[in-house]
Image 1: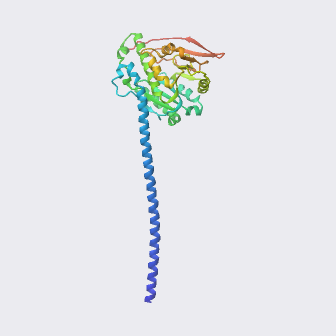
Image 2: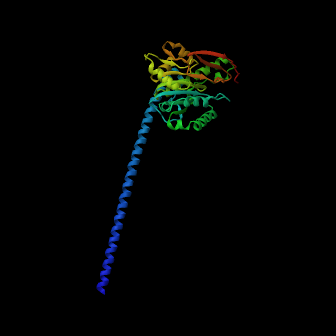
Length: 341
């Protein structure tokens, strides 16, 4: 009996050892598995950290390049010489670069009138998906009114979410320090002085937008916030550029109205900013340099805004295309000036 009991105990001991061995093997495998997962996670974190650093370095490099482009403005505007770094407030942006077209739209508060949503809808909806992927639309809020800035951002965020997510649409604002002190002009009752200060600000707005867009694309197209685009406008622009036999042009005019639809090679934008005299309207600047322009017919953009960005002024300009000829017809021009107190 003792021998039998001893054998049974030995057998139980062997079974216990075997169970422990199996359990240890399972634990060992689980430990190895956990260890491998931990190594994978650590490697993943290292890669993510490295990618993040690279992005920061690249972003810094891009921002420094863009910031350097703004340095030309210090030459023309002494009030900017004391500013450490001239750069916009990027409200929404994916820093999209390397595309064919950058489309710039400067917008300001027009009181109860706003044409920006229909302008953006027209500009974006009349692109093909491949054109949208190969371009970036930049909306520059050139207004210090916080309520207006918020309303623009809210509208764009709700209406154009897909374009914002893809990086095909950006929203920037111009910092207040960028503008010279023109408070005396705002308080003046002299309409000509107010108009002059408004023109100076408009030139600054366009120049700022141009310099921000310059490193992003091969071409820059200047638009306004109260226009409609023709169907297939970007396809027609692309085809026209590719069919030009000479590269000896400074800008192409895709609309005869104001500064709408002016296309530049991005590499020439800094030269254009230098070329325009301070206080000179961009329309006059382009007209003065018309010997280096090409005009496309018919116009690809229609002006629809009635309420001007200049307070108190209404303007009714329409373009009619007939027999492939662009005829500028001014239906009526009603200019009303209000006295700003």
